[in-house]
Amino acid sequence: MECHQLIEYFRYQPSRAQPWLDCVGKERHDKFNFGLVGRELEKLRGPAKFDLKQSFGFYSNAGSHPSTGGLAWQMTDVGQKLIGPVPHPDRFRLFIGDLWAHATRATLDFVDTMDALNPDHEPIRDQFRFSHAVVVGGRNLLASITAEQVREFWK
Image 1: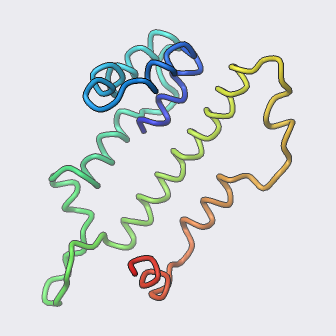
Image 2: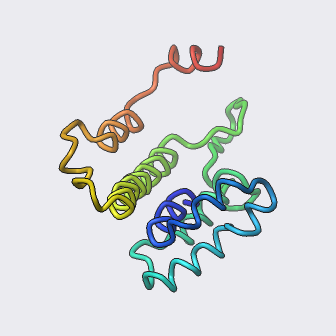
């Protein structure tokens, strides 16, 4: 969510990209946190088409902050011996699908931002005819994962 928002912000304020790159840690957070950038964007382009704030809260609660929402995503089959926590597969598919939708919007915003910052070049969508990364990425993200792939990843 934060990357998506920054991509869009740099389209409207390209001069802010270098200061973002030059600062790190707490300084970067203080100058470019999600709320500040969101308010600046709203001033620049009006209300967002998609509620990134709601998604930001959802992902924070589901993935990193202790919350009832995060706990609700876990498998809780009573009576079985489980080593976890492990996300419930159906809920996790919905989570990944939503994440993919945001990645799609972020990719399209990135392309629009690059075109806006390079008006002397032909638009990216006209320059390159190829299998779109978002489509391929979505297919890969939503495909089945085998136990062997998991073992290979965690070697």
